[in-house]
Image (cartoon, rainbow, N blue to C red; front, side):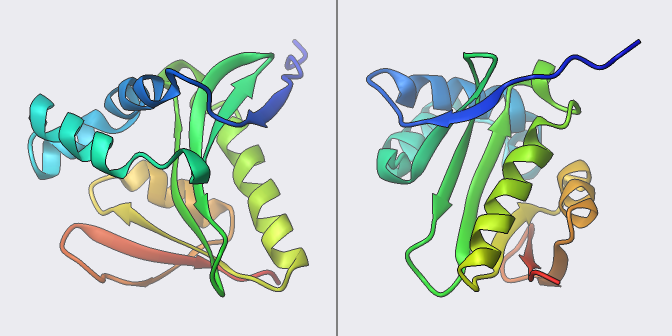
Length: 152
């Protein structure tokens, strides 16, 4: 059976997308947050409200429907992949790989590396980034693994 080609895109956030991003975070990473710190709804909501940055956030769309979020800071020497999250039913379908590969290609065209941090309990995400060419560079904080992509 042929795999259906999906149209993956990025769009700028609109009104209400901050709530979409909070709910997405809970669905995509809640189990990992729970494993490390425990999921406390008021604390997580306050953290989200304080740190949500629409200027660095793009909404990932699949076939025209909101499916995830990408947070990137490309104002420094390296491109910082702050977060990529997909709704669980969109995970494992090549969508995240497509988005991250486009990001690393764009960064490489400007002579920049891409850096990120991943929770050490999220072994699936670490393996995902390693498949895309990221390498572990250290453990800067408790529960965090730093990774870097340098174009070949």
